[in-house]
Image 1 (cartoon, rainbow, N blue to C red):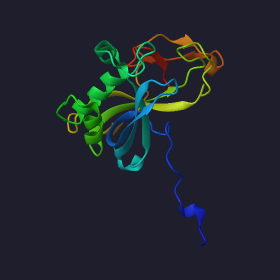
Image 2: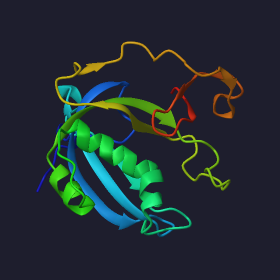
Image 3: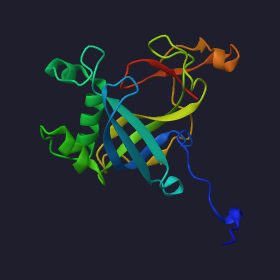
Length: 193
């Protein structure tokens, strides 16, 4: 078989999306252990709108377990889990009724749609646990606020978002000032790419 590779579009990679509000479709949310053995759900969302970015992936890991309770058997672990809070936000944005069975919820989420504010973040040099981040400096798309379809228009940002955090000297920019915004999920200041 002969292929003209010029006719084959390049696949979209995580980090390729410009900042804006996108309609996303849940492709899958799959239970699997995190790298450290904690209960985690791995999500793959794909852009539905805007048309120019249809099919672009957005990957999210929702860690539910903790160091002290890797399988999240304690109700307090569930209550404190950032990953579970984000999953709940997705389910609500999809307009899904909340059921107690998490595995059923993630199964029913497949094919559901929601709106998400997408921004680009740069992976930091160090992980939260103090180890070196093997992905340092790489750009990654991340979700900010979420809404139900129809609550906001789908639109790309024409300019970078205004900084709500301090302007700091960043090693990734050779010491040049870097604007930051506060992550709606972690509360951390993250650089604007």
